[in-house]
Length: 243
Ligand SMILES: Nc1nc2c(ncn2[C@@H]2O[C@H](COP(=O)(O)OP(=O)(O)OP(=O)(O)O)[C@@H](O)[C@H]2O)c(=O)[nH]1
Ligand SMILES: [Mg+2]
Image (cartoon, rainbow, N blue to C red):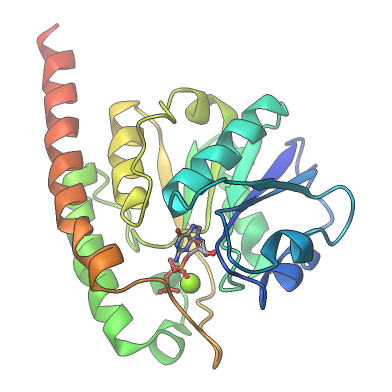
């Protein structure tokens, strides 16, 4: 429980044998429930995630993508009756000490969805690889336009918190399932009228950093996701205005 909120943490994980146990073990005490969604890993991610018997490990029968893993976790968080669902990668790139900052605007009732913004943290220029800085700046600028949230930056940061009410206004069955899900999700939140805030979080890459992002998995689909989410947002919002 954090400031009267029952908090669940959703951790999407694919082949994270190296980082998953530490990620789970360092989650703050105030968290009520932890859901690790093993996206059909080829390694022992599921076994290593069971740091304590209370951790709920859900395994996809096939690899469905990080967006689909998060949607699975969100369904579990709603079913468990939690007030807030925090998403944290299973790759140890998010600092658990930043979690209160993500939860505070929701506890104060000033936001429905809060996302991390690594560009508000001074370490970004030394910690984030230059190619990632360029890619994240370009995608964040594009997502300001496509999502309609002009004040939000660092669109690709996956460290987020969402209130149950905003979560229940989303159709989890139609969310983008792979890389590009944050860009798609922000547009859907805008259509649903959710208030979004971003807060500083520490970027972590470290010497053992590995990523699933390459041309075919991410860079190729993302322009399509951006255009699609822009078009559907504008269509949904103009339809609503015309009624
Ligand atoms: N690569 C990949 N990751 C997945 C998948 N499903 C769930 N994940 C998890 O999604 C999280 C983010 O994946 P990464 O590939 O590291 O992407 P990222 O952290 O957003 O980006 P980087 O800055 O490149 O590290 C990790 O916790 C993965 O284990 C999947 O199908 N593929
Ligand atoms: Mg990563």
